[in-house]
Image (cartoon, rainbow, N blue to C red):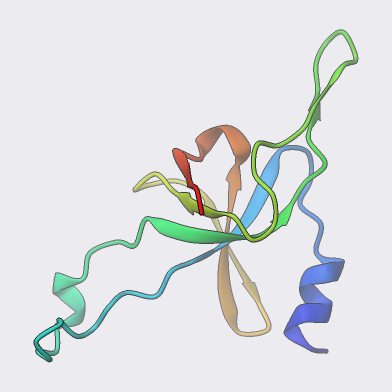
Length: 103
């Protein structure tokens, strides 16, 4: 099954957001290769799938604040790792996302 088809079938529940972390730069602008230990944790990600949102106690609906394709800033810790088709994604709650980058 193709990765795109699998992602279309994967639907996060409630206010969960599935993200793909950005790839770390392994080379400086001057061409120096960086070791893996010096890269640190990548906090930027792209939203891949979004749940429908969550309902309040009164029954009103709160939609997620991000949509598929948004570039976001994640907390350093947290989230749940999900492997789909040998690729690693992460699930976060909508309220855990720190910021959204504007185009």
